[in-house]
Image (cartoon, helix red, strand yellow):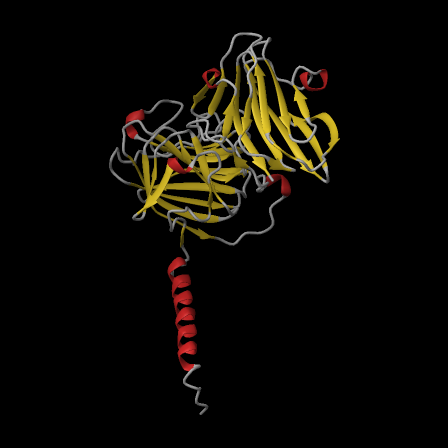
Length: 382
């Protein structure tokens, strides 16, 4: 037997203690049944605040609390394909609305505060039941996703076969099973809603803030085996975008006249007479950044000019841009993609401005609307 020097022995014991703690932590994180907790700390590690600020979500004493304001989402940092997700939820105010999204894109879709994906409804009983929806666990594709419902009513929405959810402030248990493009929901222990042929069938999981004051607990997930998924059935992966707008205030922005700007939850409205121009600029500068800006021109006289770094200016009244615009009152998506020393502008998915050289200078994002204009989904990626 080899005897360690006295000076070495305590260090070895300390190392063994750290190793034992690490093994114990891993064992706690992944239970014997294969489930792993999805929330563990106040920082919401493993989650991305897509378009809701820190004030919207709070994790404390095992409870995830959502204020419901602004309307928006958080998503997992990781994509999932086949899995079982279990959670308990309750609305604290009657008629509350929320949801769980699966197989979702990295950011919200054009002109809405929600991701493309498959939504599992989290709706409080007092909201009421109609031919178009129930409060007992509907499942439906949203914003470009597709699904074939089982027990549908002529559309793409799947309806529950039983009414089992409890009213506020009682707790409800959801078990969501997603496997090879098929989804099922058990409410309080009984499978009630199912869908199949889902696209995407690999993507992020989101929790939705939609006005309802809601709590979640015992949120956990077990991944299941899965094979290769065709590229066209995989959600858009993380492009590094983070939100520039809180939905609560103008933090992070400087306006030449604050009175012209109205924070309307997920929509930031510029309200001015025709021909009146304003300016809103980020307080910080960005290096070689990509941007997303959703714009809704309220009438034919409205316009927006955007400075998106370097020498790049986007004027929606220019013929190169105007040809791709939706009619007034509809949303447009402007995406400035910085790559290989150039910036390319896409308007509603179509190339709108020729590639321009990027001198690498640090610049702010500047919005200069004229007339009544709405903005939403303001993102940057560096």
